[in-house]
Length: 142
Image (cartoon, rainbow, N blue to C red; front, side, top):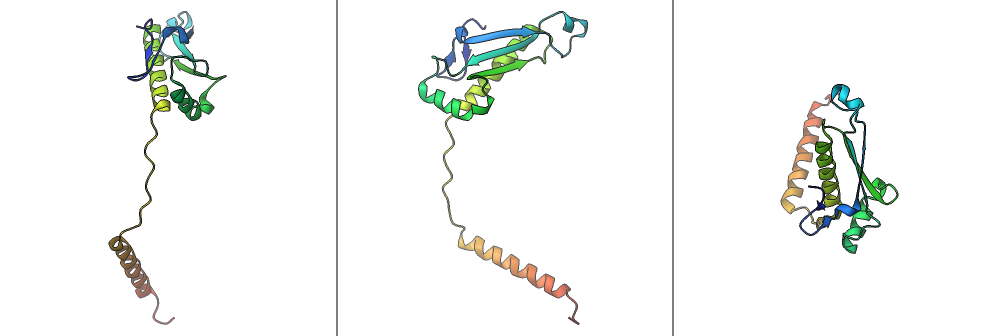
């Protein structure tokens, strides 16, 4: 499963050689086994040194993930599951989602438009009615 790499989207697949795994004791469920089994999975991907991502996508991802990078690498951990394999799958899925969002094309910018004449008129009518309502609440002696 992890030998063929990590598929981020239709055009980008990160080879397994660029992924670094580390395992340690997990703090999650598992009872006494938590203290003996290395089930927590930490996945590290060096985005700066990667050759599998096209340069324009790498620049976009670096710009969007600037504060999340640790020495130019993306680090993802997973410890929610009881088995190392499940945590490895969860960490890989997290990394794929994170990189997919970072490399996605930005949405088109909003084109500024003026409010329609009808909406302006409705807003002014509402303001006028509200002002009249407040005026009627005042004391007549003032």
